[in-house]
Image (cartoon, rainbow, N blue to C red):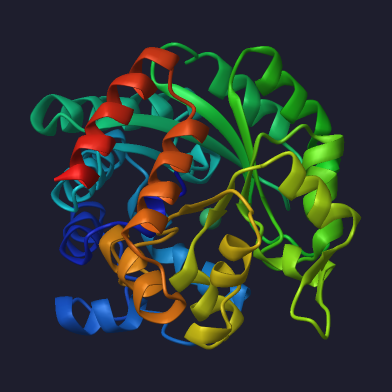
Length: 334
Ligand SMILES: [Zn+2]
């Protein structure tokens, strides 16, 4: 559900693409050393984390590079046992060498289609707009040209603090008017107000991260959770949260046991589990599942619940979701 294309390249591919276009800015061209460099560990800063995208974006400036990255993303997800995935990125970031947004989206869709043809993995593309720039309407316009051709959603990404989602209301409305699913990064670096604005003002159907909803939950002396207005809204409406545990550990500098995923799950929130950026967090979806088992006591029923929740919240058509629900049920039954 929440997987960034430019945050999930293979290290070797970054090196080869840099060589192809003569990009000399990589900190090293040794694959193992570069993998270590990208691994953000516990940098504890969203800004520092985003800085590492400078290199992946620099090498994704040709249609061939974008197509290859999208194909390999699909191949890697399929190899991890994923049956449905939505890959996202901001095409505007890939227009530095003359591509138009539409060219970039077309290349990504071609790569995803090739991955589907080869692996059977069902893939959709989410187009991101960067919330710290003022051209989100142009981004949405490019996205809606591909409705029905593989683009399934629209998202606001980039630094959250200081850039409220409703500054991009026109873009969100345009995307929704054309039938795209709307998910918005909120409650990652900013608090519950950001989540509230994404839902109530922009009409987000899903929330990217959303973990800071815990700021609106109080645990009483009796151990019972008390929900503030925003937390109650998110829980009562069962708004799906795209939780990405390792990404949060790395950008927010929190300990594994202190991650809110367990509390939110036990409190009845609608959670899905995601990788965010597989390169920067050096993580797979299997790792994220293992994380909640090891650190938050999830059992097999809990994992099935979050998997089914993800499928329910997917921006795929009804028939696809029904078919994949059978695959997921059979998988957990076996
Ligand atoms: Zn993200």
